[in-house]
Length: 186
Image (tube, rainbow, N blue to C red; front, side, top):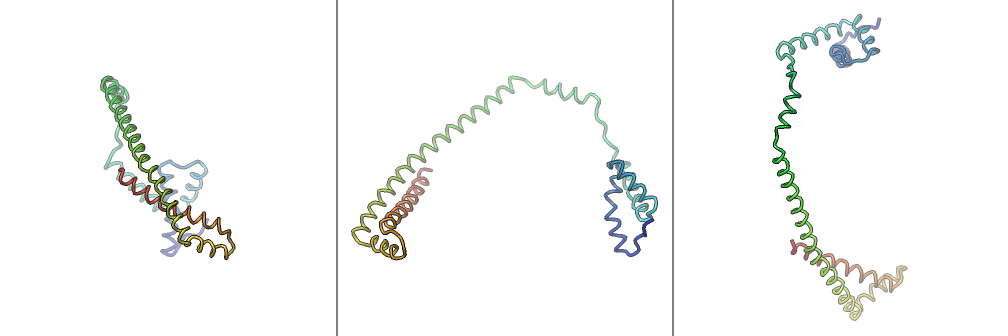
């Protein structure tokens, strides 16, 4: 037989360790091997015997305070009769309303996308045109060439750097313009 816990801390830990198993045993929610282990432990553990007595008193109090409800034997028949009593025309009308709402939402979504694309595409094209105009300005002012030359001195190709610079400026301006036009469209 195992030694019984003696300190208050050991007793508390023992109760916490066995509480769920005792409750499962009491409820019958335990397999045969665990049932035998719990019954064997209960035979020699005063702490768990007291805990089991307390759990049994709680169960008895709960059962006496709130008895288990009984289902009407004809519950299923009554439920199916109520379902069958629902007018089929009402169900068909409800389905029709839902279908009409779905179609209207799809049409609204389609209109929204077309409107947004009608503003976004010109925004992107406008951004590209503006980028080329800025690139022309940077080329005539020599600023793009200076930036490209600085990049080339670091180890890059001057024409590649100049093209990438112009593309980034164009993409940034096009993105800003497209975003602004999309907000205007909404």
